[in-house]
Length: 359
Ligand code: NAD
Ligand code: IPM
Ligand code: MN
Image 1 (cartoon, rainbow, N blue to C red):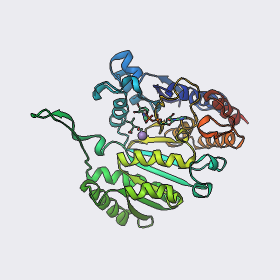
Image 2: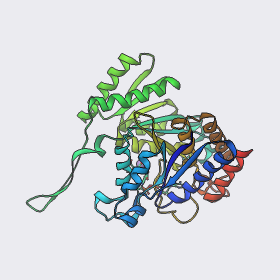
Image 3: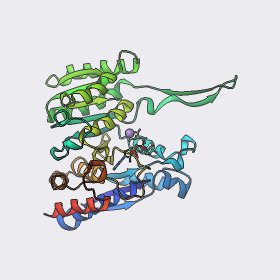
Image 4: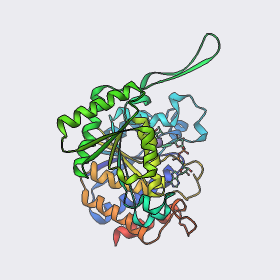
């Protein structure tokens, strides 16, 4: 049966990096027997310009009918003044909510060849292998009330609400514990239970779940401020980190720099049925958009995650990850990971991955 994908390039560097991922999919189809077909649709600011909405109904329908979605990035200065209801970022939140993608996996793994590219000392980052499990459809991103209101005295009042129910916490807990069982058997749950009641509940629910269903997994808890510090002090203490929507957003950007660049970190966003959306964790990088210098590896590694988690094609996922490791070992570098050395552009990096795939 042919796997059907939805491809949503988006804004800024989105189309550039997705083009390289599409090259990889094309090579897998033509040379490695992957039965796959895809349709593209507009999302984010680009879609807003075309249709007046960042997530047009046709794009959502395409995503809903696909086995998996590959997304580039959305957003940019051009659309920053828009009302929140139609900002490009709303498209992402809409896709996550409508597809029920509550579990966001963001793996930060060191490539031995890149330990020098990290802002931290090589001995601190060598060998790190962290899986950030971020809750993606709840928390302060979706809590009500939200918005900005005008008060009678002329002041304005902005509100967002951090809210979690026990079942939302439990289902992301299951995901984290299950993943830990296949890894080193350790979960660190990150919260702010000393101050925020909603995350005090988070800690309670995760603790109960661990005691009841996962006595074989070593569970620890950490406050988010300490976790942010520990991630740069001694990142190798972490295996699986499970946390709320907002904390996971922030900690995964931080974790990406342990590997050398945010341009290296892929993600999978999964729902209860295992359907998923795959995207790099970074944004549309307006500062380098249009220069052809963006690192496409996070997007290509997102294709590998798609092969593994949604398409049940683990050997091909291994092959794509192997090709990426190979090009890094061979010295291919985009500017974000080149330091003072020579760098190639987005398309050359993509071509190098294709060549390594076929080797
Ligand atoms: P960003 O991740 O776009 O960029 C942060 C920094 O990292 C920039 O200096 C950028 O050049 C660099 N960078 C990011 N990806 C890179 C890559 N592949 N290769 C090389 N360098 C890379 O974050 P930002 O600047 O805070 O946000 C820009 C826009 O993107 C905003 O509109 C924001 O809302 C949006 N955004 C979208 C997503 C998404 O679509 N998933 C994620 C984060 C931010
Ligand atoms: C991410 C992004 C998004 C988020 C924004 C663009 C909505 O930062 O995917 O990490 O905050 O989740
Ligand atoms: Mn983010």
